[in-house]
Image (cartoon, rainbow, N blue to C red; front, side, top):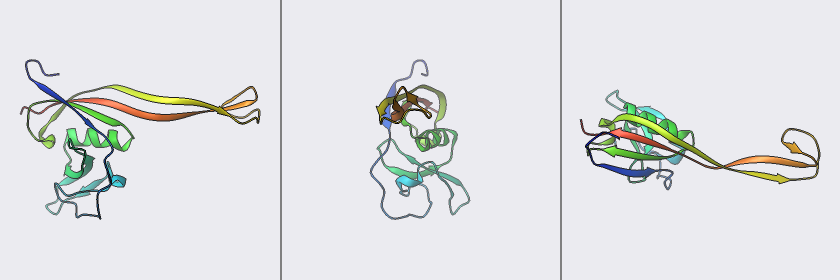
Length: 141
């Protein structure tokens, strides 16, 4: 957190799929299967597809903050952004990435003994239910 500045926490996670493929220009919609993908804008600038602060999928300039969030989203994380300042996301600086949490479930079933994950005569499987992480941004500059 940046001392002396107000902050707003925003949950950024999966959103409803965007429509048809759009040209890779800043602000254009991108599809849920494109989260974390890179593209080149018509002006030659680098873009990344991320879920923005309103829960919509857009191509944004590939800055450090955008790249960090896009990489985490493409790895399956729900990203909570804690930000100080009102500047647009591409103008923000990452201060900290923290509180990574994975919720999983250990499921047992079957009666075939042996093999990986076996416990006695039951087979056990760990299923990841959700992954979340917090990103703190300075959006004051």
